[in-house]
Amino acid sequence: MEGITKFTPILSSAAGISKDDRSLSFALLWGIEPSSYFEMFPDRFILTAGSFLKDGQEGVLLSQTIIDDVLEENGVELVVGDTILLSGRNNVTGTKIREVTIQGIGYYENAAGLLDRISFVDANTLRTLTGLTAIRNSAELDSSTTIEPISENSLFGGGSDTLFSESLSAESSSDDSGTLDFDNILGDTSVREKFLAVDNNAWHFLLLDVADGVSLVSLREQLADRLNNTIVMENWRWAAGFIANIAFGIRTILNVIIIVISVVAIIIIMNTLVISVTERIAEIGTVRAIGGQKSFVRGMITIEVLMITVVFGVVGMGLGTAIVAVFNAVGIQTSSLFLKILFGGDTLNPVLSITSLFTSLGVVAVIGVIASLYPASVALGIAPVQAMQRK
Image (cartoon, rainbow, N blue to C red; front, side, top):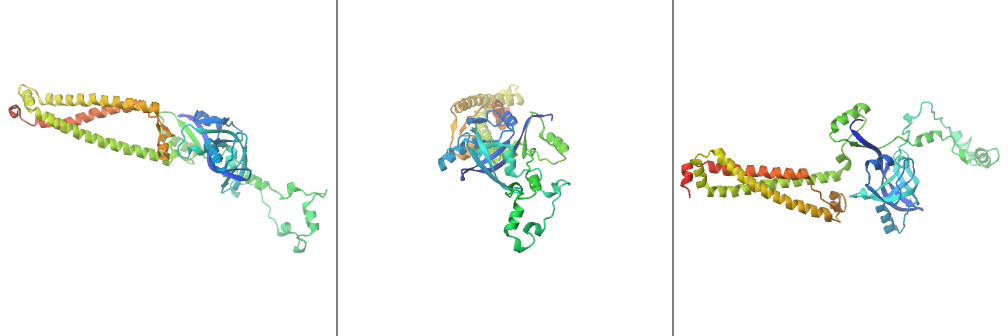
């Protein structure tokens, strides 16, 4: 579709990890299409051992955090090549256990919250664990498939006297050679196999990389028309969940604080200018008496305020830029989980935004202009003759 530069499908679930009948840990699993996922998010997941998954390859790419936790809590060292069991439960096929091989070990470049427990697994393994089968209820069975009713005699024999007799057991469970037919001991299992067949095209989410300038609303409408309103489309903040809400909530609080500081700055500058203008009432009156218009006096005061606010605003932004550069080079380290979520990792390396820099300069100029309005009105509210008489 026009406007979509990249996309990748993804499955999401959780599973327990065990080895040699010993429960070790749990993992948050993402079933991915490796080629498109790592192309869309390059250099985000850093390998410490093994290799990345390939399309069609079975296996798991375990998080380094899980490896460390298993070693610390259970004394078991998991390495590349080990076979582990993943167990999960779903409402379609019940509890499922799958044996997978560790193909690689790694971690996210910026792990915060639960991101450090994310592990990648091949899509079909996760489809099995989550019950994404081709048929999920009897209504979806092919019309040609019929389930024959089973009579009581077929299940238990002709009478209770012969239910456990040796002759019945031998006759019903042995073939002509006298050996047990284990392959057919459960009878016809074709219907069960239909229910357990994995849907190779099933995914939970589809991640879209939208080109700059493309409207999310129009893109949602296009998808709704094509898919008859059977899809839910949201932005990245919805996908990030409470972490994004916390970050944007704190940003809103900080913006409110900045507004309060701006109001305080306007009041301080205004009070200072009122004192400055009051001390120069006589000079202003002289300017008015020799022909200076109100607009000239107002412009004089405004230019003075702009020069003061802009010059010292630039000095302040210069100091701020230097501080940001130092923190960017050194980094702000934290061990707090809350700050890790906000920082997107253990270290915050702040980056200066040129747009914010020019915005700040504009805000400083606006504050200066607003602060000059009242002092100018005070100076212009006095008649020139009275102003000249003041000392």
